Image (tube, rainbow, N blue to C red; front, top):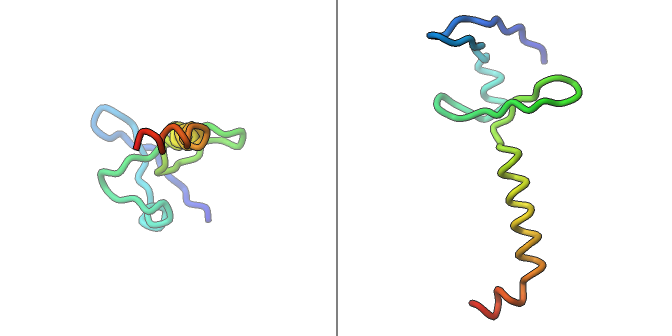
Length: 74
């Protein structure tokens, strides 16, 4: 899929309007947040916060490591 996006002035900023098909592919709607991630191939738009995902994986690993202590505390 390839859509041409035009950079436009939106208020005092610049932005692009995403086609409906792209919004549906990303499963986002008005008011949702998108994260722009720099990759070797360019910029990737995603509705998922990569820093939050990394923090959650660290938390899961911590909970696995200290599973017995959490059982005792429960």
